[in-house]
Image 1 (cartoon, one colour):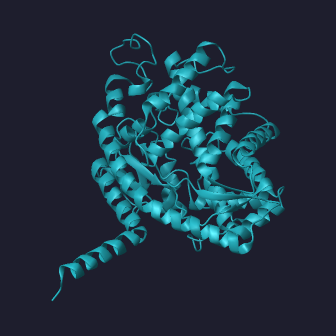
Image 2: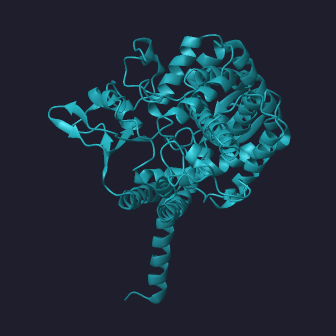
Length: 478
């Protein structure tokens, strides 16, 4: 006969086994559930490429089609992105519809990030050195690589925008704002608009004082210029470059042989370029880019994509095609490959508004990577996914004082174990926060509501002017 004590012991043992095994099954289960929730909320009216009809060989053709040029108007996904990238998503460069306003904004962005290669390289090196001097002073420092890189790029883009060294207060505001944006995008935290509004007020004051030494777009109001700077340089630029560097440094940490080759040949642009190409291939910064068709597209085989269709271009799926052993990290494959001819679009396609930093980013990343490897050996045993919600935990080990092999192996193992248990809890939080934010974004309808009252050049449909009152008063509530 089974006693109550025996039954309770069995239940306790089962509960303990379930809890201890959670890192093995819970993250996958939560991710699958989260994807189902998002798909249900977003609807099923979007077309995702590549697919059975338009395969990878036609991917860039459709992506670069002149009719695949709508950015926000008419897509339910736009409500989500406007929500996550607020404040001022209506003037965020990524969301502007094609037209004269976008053209002027794009020219301004290119002018601000321009400069000689030597000057930009030196600026990135100097910013990295300043942050690393503060962040790692001992033999071994445990960091999260994305957090380590945030202040580097805050310093860098502040320098490009204001043409002066970045003061500590500005760096804190930019880093806090960028962290809040990316944490919301990863669904690891709900967005905090009051935190973002602090940077808005700072930029508004600097712009009003005439401290921005660039000619900003004349088609933008004072309010819009503030949000243009905040969204383009201190949101997207800082977030994307921090993510890119976290991926690059993490693959080096997890492939010590390749790390040693790069560190031993700091002037070998081809070697580091191969590592960067392979990193971007496996861990593209963009998951899915969406476009809205402004007329019909006929990709062939009798297929017609109607006007007003929402097209979702999956970078990870496209980057996984056309390669031998696509899941293997192999930088040497690029010795025989041309990025131009491969299924490889880390900065988008040239015919459909590619990333404006396609030239700047690799140059600045090489500078920062070399500065990191000049000082440290990188050690990490954590998981590596495209979204890196754990922010890439890693050990920075002083290069002149390496760890003994056994100590190094033990440290990587402990990081791996901690990451596995963190992942279980983090996945549950992502499900909760992500579902709540998606529902809140759909309720607010920021993009849809905007285009009910404005045309694609940002002009009010009733012919009226901008709302009266302080243009920044609502920033914390957007």
